[in-house]
Image (cartoon, rainbow, N blue to C red):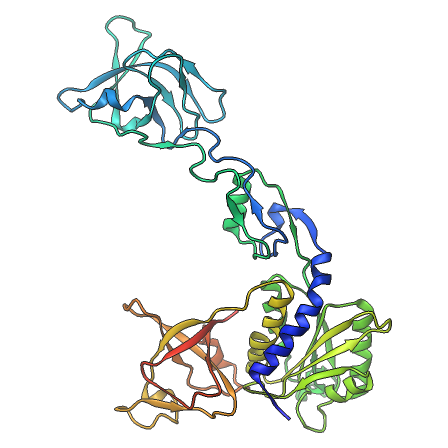
Length: 440
């Protein structure tokens, strides 16, 4: 008996909510440089102002802008250089005499004047010219040939981050741009959620190398799901291939429970064939099967269960995914990944909207070119691989990949997104708006 895709998502959401408190309790503190792709436990606010002081945005000269207002190529204004300051130097204090300036480097703290108005701008070195003093050969003079603006090339203290500015919210996936911001305010380590430990198996005697190598079929799902999980920041262990019998399956699952994995995933052997032994193995283990068969295409045989451990202290979530590669990919993207996101306190993913573009050659069910339309069975949610089209239009456009057989990989290579067609949608026409999810 199939359940709807929405019902399956509801079950997965509730299960993840029950498990995620243990995930939060197992948080760890790690160096900032190792934090990319991890999920931060708590929000982080800036403890300082950045920049901490008024600093220069350019190499040039700090001076008073009002003293340059009459400057021109024909009538340049001359300034006497009374000091030099570089980034990291101690604060420089200079007299506040008229038409004086300080040579200043990018990132250097603006000098303080002991009397009079402060220096309020920086004139780039390229916009000045050095001249010799006729009175003192050691004296440094520069000329400015155009007016400067107040606060020109000057970074004001706190204009980037103020004390208390939010840099990253709790339960956010840390990206390199977060690392840049956090490092700029002196953060060197973060408390993050643990990486869920995921056990992964493929099933099928045809995947096992034996003396009869002519019958060997390469394992596709194991390498694919391993790399996807690793790219998303999870700790995954591919534990090999299970033969087509319940006893072997039971043994492998028991070994997983002893290792206390957070999630167990198998691919294959969840349909109704003679050698589809995953459900039988779960029943031998007294697992609580929460659903088996979901009204979704591809991926109808998908299974989700709880595996009780020997101490009965916790249940381990178990996903049985179909063996067809594209079906396994769809079930991972739209069943497993939402579960993992909820487990790690992530918000539900928001789809991207795009305009569907159809062509007569796109699908055998498109009837004619003048009324481009493709029909879908209403009893299931459909997940079709798609391709974002290059377009001069500001609106994103997408097309369906033509061959959507769940066992064919070559058409899947062309895809860069999934298109979700909800079960109540009977047909789509050229120009309709659809929901798109990026490939992972």
